[in-house]
Image (cartoon, rainbow, N blue to C red; front, top):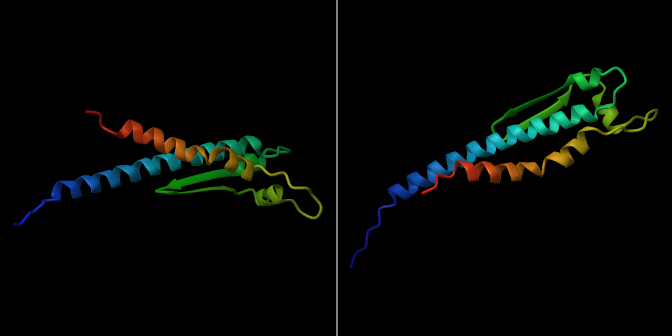
Length: 115
């Protein structure tokens, strides 16, 4: 007795699912990076507003960056021997990064075809 199973359609479906999941992950990453950046901007210590205006972000694929170009954003975050730390990046990250998985679930729910 010989049984043959053609998995061509299953493999094609798995590739499509994988591609769709990646798209959803990229969208969730982009949206999470924006949330973190906006929160960091709001939380940045304000004297002149220069550091707040210098906060930028990028999101490409499943990677994201949020950074300050003021030249002293890191000193504000961690402090110096003459100045206490005034963290604004880490709290923004802590508050918003858990939203990544929530967004993934939400976007997957919306991208799944219903029968």
